[in-house]
Image 1: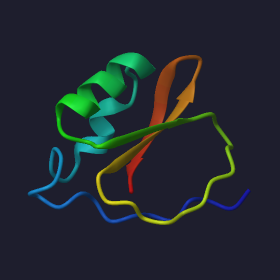
Image 2: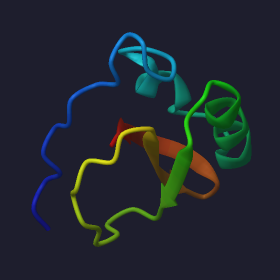
Image 3: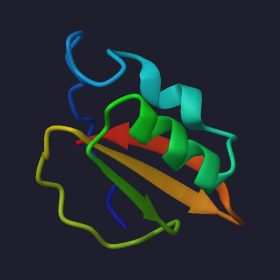
Image 4: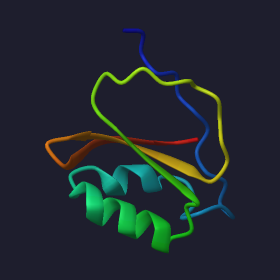
Length: 77
């Protein structure tokens, strides 16, 4: 599988500002979703490792790669 290209971070005025995605790694997926929504993310997408997805950028979306109910990777868009 090809690596997922980097996406631009949320703008400083966006949900949580830049650098926030790393804060979700290691959290339970339900807790991570709760925190993301409380911080203004309008779309929260949880994916299993290796999932095939489209790579269009969607403002306000945060993506979680989840293994065994734990967020192992996170990116915006």
